[in-house]
Length: 594
Image (cartoon, rainbow, N blue to C red):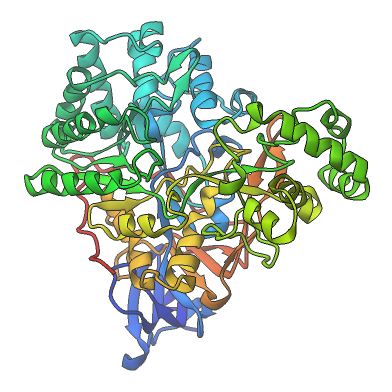
C-alpha cells in the first residue's frame, strides 16, 4: 500500500490566511510540521492522501494566534498546557514582558525576582518558589532550561531589564539606583549574549504603576544613558525587538509622555529594530492616545520604527466572591461566610434577607476601603448581563442603571450579580479603554498601521483578570458581532502575521506553503467566550480565574493536533523559539483602515 502523501489535510475549510486577503475555500496539507500545500477548491483541492483528514466544511481555518504579551514565565514550570491560552487558539506565546522575568539570576537572590513578579504581575510568591527549579544563572542557561520542556504551544522569551539590573548591580539595581557606565556596558553585553542565545528581544518598564517593595519596579528610573548602550549592543548583533511600558501610560505623569516617545525614537535608531510601547485610553485625557499615535507616525516617517501595543478591549478589574476585590468583605459579617464554598455563600445570602441587609449596610459604610479607585456603581457592570449567558466586554448598562430600572440600589445589583452562577458571578470595572462608555477608541487604535495587538497579560493577575481570552473576543466581537466592527480578515491578520513579524517570527502567522503548521479550525458561527471561574490549581494552594471557549474544533501546533473541541489530545509539540543569530526583527506593514 502506498504511503500517505501528507501527515494531515484539512479539507474544504474557509481559509482566512493571516495576510488580510479575502477568505477562500481551500484544502491545507501538512507535512513534517510545515504547511506543504494550500489548494483552493476551485482548483480541485489537495489531491494527495493523508494520515489524517479533517473535514472543515462550514468552518474557518486560520493561523494559530500569536500572543506577544504574556507572563507565563512562572506558569510554564508547572502547567505545560499554558491554560487558558491553549483553549483560545493561541499557538505561540511571548513572555518576559514589562522587564519582568527570572534570568539572569545570582544564586541566593532568586527571592528578589519572585518578589518583583508578585508585586508587579500579581503572581503568588509561594507558587513561584514551589514550582521553579532555578537550574540556571545566565540567560542562555535559562533558555536551555525552558528548551528542555514540552508545551502545548511554542514559547519565546525576552531578556528582562529588572532581572538584569539585580544581576549586575545587586541590591542597588533592585532599588533603582543609577547604573555606572561600567554597569551599563555589562548589561548591554548580557542582553546581546541573551539574544545571540535565542531571546526574541529586550523588555523594560518605566511606568510608575509597576511597584516593588516601597518604590517602583527596578528599571523605572533608568534612562537613555543606561538603555542606549543596550540598544547599540542589540544593533551589533543584527537587531531585535525592544518592548517597554512607558511612563504616563496609565494617565499619571502626563508631562513625561513626550520624553517617553523621544526615548523610544532614540532606542529604535540605535538598535535598528522596532521599539514597541504600550498604549491605552486613560480617564484624565481620553484623546491622548490619538496624539501619541500621530507623533509615532511622524517618528516612523523619519526612519525609526516606533510602534504602539494595545489590547482589543477594556482593561478591567473583575470583582466577586472569587476574586481579590469583594466590596462586601470589609465588615464584621463577612468572616462568618469566609469558610463556605462559593455556592454555599451564594445560597446563604440569597435565602437570608437579614444577612443581605447586613452585607449591604457594611459595604455602604466601608466605601473608603473598596471604592477608593474602582467599583463606582455608575461605571461597574455585570460581566454577564442578566439577559445573557456570555460575558460582555462592551456593556451598556451599569449596575447603577440596572438599579434605577428595577427600583434597587447599585449595591443591591452588585450583590445579586455576585450571587449568580453559584457564587461565581463577576463584576466588570473597566479602568482603561472604556472612558467613553464604548470601545470606539480601541477600534481606532487597533486599525492604526503603527499598532500591534497584545497586552493579554496571560499568566498574570491571577485573581483579578481573565484576559487570556482576548483572541477569541477579537474574532467574535470585532470580526462577527459588533455593528461597527472590523473585517474578519483584518482581525485575523492583527493577531497572527502582524504579531509574529514584530518579533521576526516570519516562519508563522500565515497559511502558506513552507510556513509552520500552526492552525485553528473554528466553528465561526458558534465561537464564544465562556464565563470565568475560580480554579484552585495554582501550586501549592493558590487559585486563579480561568476562562474557556466553545467553537475551536481543532488546534494544530507544528502539524500535531493538540486540542479537539477544547479537550487536550495529549500532544505537546510546543518548544522554545530561539531567535536566529544575526536575524533582524522588522515589523511587516500593518493592514490599512477598516
